[in-house]
Image (cartoon, rainbow, N blue to C red; front, top):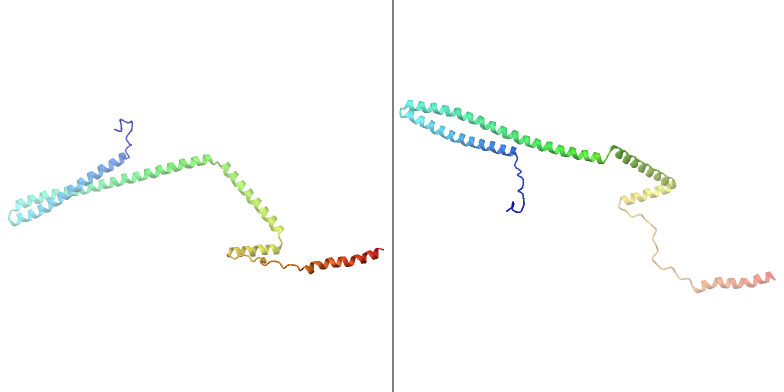
Length: 207
């Protein structure tokens, strides 16, 4: 159905190294099964040789022990082959890890190269120069502000900063919440009476 609709199958993620590792492990497992079967057979033959000696069949027992000796040698060879297969599997798996590490290093190196193309040495020097200029400009502003404040102002600023740092509110004068008292009408009329009283005196002096 997938081919009919023009869809392609997903590419297999199994690599040739994975296939090789799988085959080696299968061979190792077969050798282990063979080793187990030979070990059981040797144990049976040893018991059989012991029984033949009891029955007085020394020749048959000797022949059986020779066969057992030969199978012991095969068992040793099988053990060596299993060790070689396991070592080869480990080498391939470690090589796969190394290849992934190298591939990751290559990707990282390419990324760094692209970033270097975007940000050149001249750009870095320009940004550093602009940053230094901004720092110098801010320092000049700080010096101007410091020169405009008196020592008392500096002390007040430091005290306020300390209070803010400690989470305390700076003490400010309280604004009165009560209404101002009203001026009595007699007090308001008093300046008018004084003006009227002084007016005839000024007229007489003028005459």
